[in-house]
Length: 140
Length: 140
DNA sequence: TATTGTTATACTCTATAACTATA
DNA sequence: TATAGTTATAGAGTATAACAATA
Image (cartoon, rainbow over all chains, first blue to last red):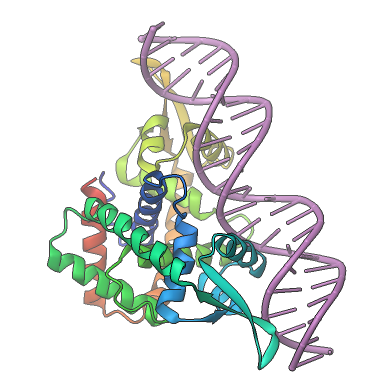
């Protein structure tokens, strides 16, 4: 594949993301979570308990979609919704211990997919890539 | 946002890709192409004429979806389908001059979105990011 | 009045299966 | 018989609008 240097990074990012979650969902066994569910669990693990609105904002998704995603995860027992006592309109979403467990095993799956996807990069280059991406994401 | 160092790069990539194309489609005026159409045009520009099957393979999309995408682009006059004379089952897809023009103006839109998205990175870091991503994508 | 979350609904994106025309 | 592309269709993914509960 020869995208060459178009000067445009975003199509490359988009392509890599697509390849990644396609590989993840393709490697899923019955009962495994989807890449969308993984994204939510990852966020909860990294940020701690969140209101649904926060999740909505971070993913740039409509609130109604987040409702559906959380319904799935709650039925699986991976997250919990509880009322915020200081503002009873809000639901605080937290990761359950079961959710943390599933997250870890999914990360194991993800690690091997990353290995395949990033095989052409040295370990140092992978760290650089991770650092740069983290810097972008945390700056927003 | 604090994804922190989970050691997992793919969720970051996924997040950035989503933010990028959302911004692109949000900045679209009536008549502008979508991010999916952009991806196809970019591929044709980088790789030259391709059979539909090649496009299908590169994007990891089902062939039936590529048909629809190309129908859109052909109606807009941005690509052309012609029979391969050596194998009349194949359609060779090529970028038209109009398509190249639209591609350029879309890249201009994309450039300003990239600037916003990558503002926390130095120019050298952006080049590094682009180089690493290119290396991954070209190695597949 | 404004905001959080929900439901109902429609539109976009993607995959599967059956078909055609070539090979 | 196998392959490139197409059509029809169903299933995810996503957005919009109207609503209930709370602020």
